[in-house]
Image 1 (tube, rainbow, N blue to C red):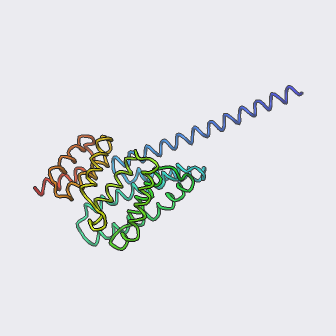
Image 2: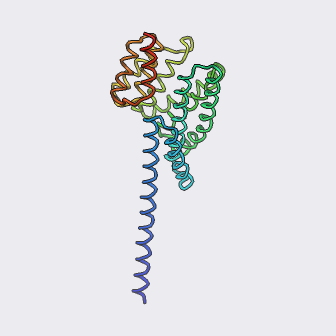
Image 3: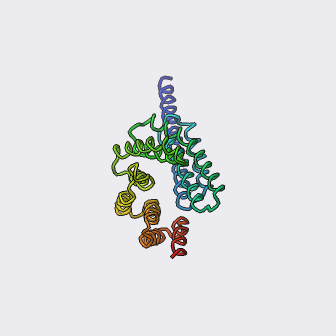
Length: 255
């Protein structure tokens, strides 16, 4: 009888381990699928893929409320929605419609910030959570007054991200954007921003967002040929990048 009980306990123990391992593997598969949706959504500018990714990440949060990485990815997905909205704003030529798109972007950023806050609460030394929070705060800016309220807060988070990990390429891009978008009287320096972005694309030659931001910065600085060459280089990396195609067509049309 004793041997039978011991055997039953052993079987139960190993079955429990098997079930836990199976659950963990299934969870990891869903996480990888969500990340794949997110990556593909970023590269193809697909809103639907971003929604698909977000749905899975939110479900993973319900099942694992104390895991910072799932919360971080929800915040990151909101940031990618903001980037898509910013591209729509760039393409829009009607002032009223542009204003409405900015309001939509601000609302998306507001929805994403609590997730960034929670990911930092759960793990304060994860660089990219600070980067995403800073970028989301930047996306709340829609004019001078909102810039005054949010600009400093965004910069603090980006600085923190770089203090934690100075190899965080996306944080360097956000840092460059600070110099590019700020007025000179408030510390803006577009040439400094371009310098940072050139370093980013040199160190990360496949990072599409580096080229996009560099091309836009060159265009803003009146360096049309450098902007054209930058967008052409990006189209060599990803011929389907719609932002590179749009901005390149703009520049070629205006020549």
